Length: 439
Image (cartoon, rainbow, N blue to C red; front, side, top):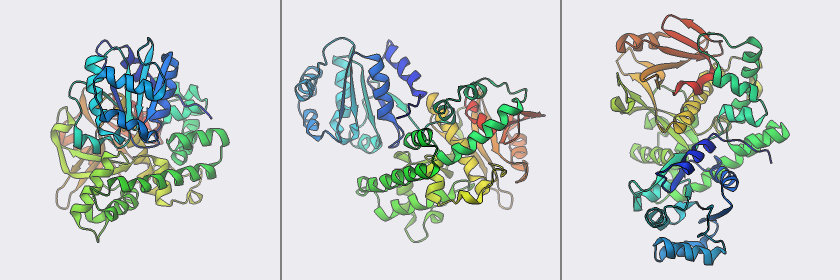
């Protein structure tokens, strides 16, 4: 199987070498590659590595129902697995930790009583367990992992020279045309393949978009099967309705619950949206009126829009027919710009997770007869900065100008297929540089 280098490896290195290291909880939606990334990294960094999966190895759950002192817990794990956990260069990985709530409590005692042992936990539905048992405050470090980013996708294809272009291109000079055009072609492929690791490896190994589509279908079916895990907290029909309708509202300036389903009561739809957000299948992009950082300080929760976990899953869930798209079509025009907005949000979110700030914001002005929206707000060079996703043939920059005038900001970005260009206070950047904007 093709190996994908994940940016989280650098975060894991920093965690391992930290003098104040706590047990680490890695969170993220199912199928984004958490377990594989942790396993791959740990095997290169530790001589002795024990991985337990509390969903698959259900017999091990009983260990966490007993004494949670570190010594007793590790002894019981040794007896259950035959792996020595008291030696040097040893690490413990507890996967699917949400399957046993007391395992989360055990992280505290492992930190307090066995701090020299590196402990990593991972789970996809951790939020639901945290509501029951909580997370030991000040005793656990956390990382969030999302789909494969565009840069990681390029690296998986062996296109390291283009990774360098994305990382190093200055914003005051155009990217060389040959690199710019090839990057747009590769981005078009990424729009189809998306960032789910199984889809990426399938494309790298086969170059078959039909097989990639099969992967998307299986992943989406897996999420639907997971709904039974939420059913006790939300109406099953509401979860299915939101999961089915959410892809079709990506790109809309404001989501209303009735837009997701007209028949089911709004409160049930709201609960379903929140649960799918906690499961990280959906991401709420919340409106903010903050003139200064943090953007969260000016957030208005009643105004929000949605993006999906992954652009490849998004178009498959929509049933979008790519045969209607020509190679000459502007990426920001496909599906009225929804895919470009999804891509930018996905890249910004991935980068913000790397930088420990996992929330997306936008600006929405709710004025009768004069609504306005800026697609995203980012933290850039210590200030809130507006970001629009536009093409040369669709729409104007009226909302962006309104934002600049109202908030007096001195910098703005427009992402499109255009090469880098500066026009007064606005910098035009190609879509593939979106990840550079959360710095």
